[in-house]
Amino acid sequence: MKHRNLSAAAAHARKAGPHQRTRGGEPIPERPGYGFGEWSGIITDRLRAGRDEYGNGSFALPRHELLREVSEEAADLAGWGFILWSKAIGVDLEDTLRRAPEYLRAASHATVWPPPESKDPRVIAVWLGALSHAVMRHLDRITDD
Image (cartoon, rainbow, N blue to C red):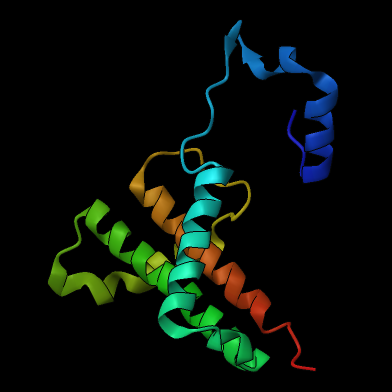
């Protein structure tokens, strides 16, 4: 059963019990990618490395500077996604910037949630662009009060 409401999905999974988490008697494999433990470890290590290298200066930045930094990182997601997409479809290096609008249009219309199940790098690349677009659209809603 698909839920748009994530808390409803979690409640359904708790209520359903383990018998709902199988397909044809076989356990449903865990989704690929980083689990919470790996992901949180990577982020914590990066925070620690940033603290050690730069001190805690980022915590002193005004909110508008933090939002600018986040926006730049989100733009990088789309940029890296475009590079992945270009390599996946075999775009000639001389032709990359001419093809960027095609990628960006696809990304701006892609669904951010749920994430794609596909292992196709083209699909994942467009999803990265969609994430970037969603983050950047929402950042300008934050006020600097």
